[in-house]
Image (cartoon, rainbow, N blue to C red; front, side):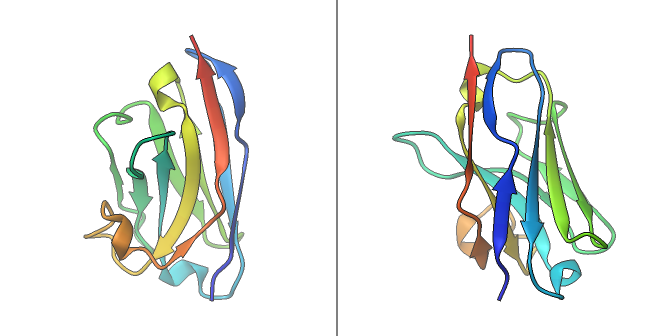
Length: 124
């Protein structure tokens, strides 16, 4: 069992930066692929970024590539999402996820554990 708690959301203006963090419980954090998804009102959950278990391979949605950076600290059981040059279309609830597969990480169904989410609002 893994419990995930996100933090760092807030209200910012377009062009600003935010850093989201996700703290994970459990001693097996390093065995999970970690990721971030987001969901805007009235829209489906959308893949944002993922990072593999140990080597740290990363993948990003095209919409955030070059602006967002995912990282993890296995010693601290945390995963972060640095978001730069935020746009109004980035407004959503961002959720952290843990799962077994980096290959299928863009699919919400491939993830085992989810956090409650943190709200990010970007004003124009």
